[in-house]
Image (cartoon, rainbow, N blue to C red; front, side, top):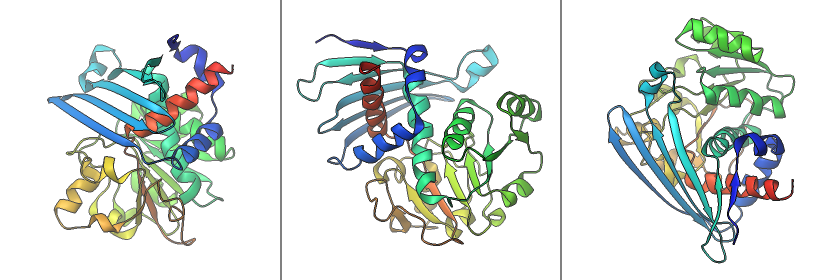
Length: 303
């Protein structure tokens, strides 16, 4: 078997957000993924390895190094590698650019949720954060809501204004007022303390939570979780692994049964009323990397 090497520069233009979310929907109709994660830490750095196996799609291993202090060295904070294996033989089938898979998987995950939970007439979008994920979410949201008015907020005003100018966005300085005015709020920070407060949320809003990925990380407070109907992409990769839900569950603020549905429960994964507040936690498990990588490889082969 010839191993395919899929580069970011050549593959990225072949992909579309609509096709990816269709691939994610189809992937969740297959047998449930078997997944395994491992985390190694050297504060503040993280080595994360994720593996997934889906009958009919094959196997994938994705390894990432997350070094937050790289920013001061003018280096990317995240590096890694993605390997995709044949479903039929287990042979190495492709090595796909890590940043390509991460870009499309991470934003595609939250777009998939927003298309089902946000009000179809949503117009005002607010993104908390000004990193790579925030930029990708701008593209993802605009693919489905082309007339969206998107604003950005970040703790660093200089960085926020530069980001807003580069992406044709407005820059917000008052977070509380910006949250109150939004239809969809996306948290894409690397905060360990809540930045989005539940008291600010308004009826009918949808929140995509992306940034927290470790057991000690949170972007929203207990009030937000108590006021909203809470959804996840996967129970297995969020409830016991990410502080956003792990901490409030451990403190008795909520229970695992309070999570309404995951992507594997499409009949339940939907907005119930115009006025309810919905939250979806993006855990970004390896099964989503596998679904995304298989979509990328198919697009690559039919280019």
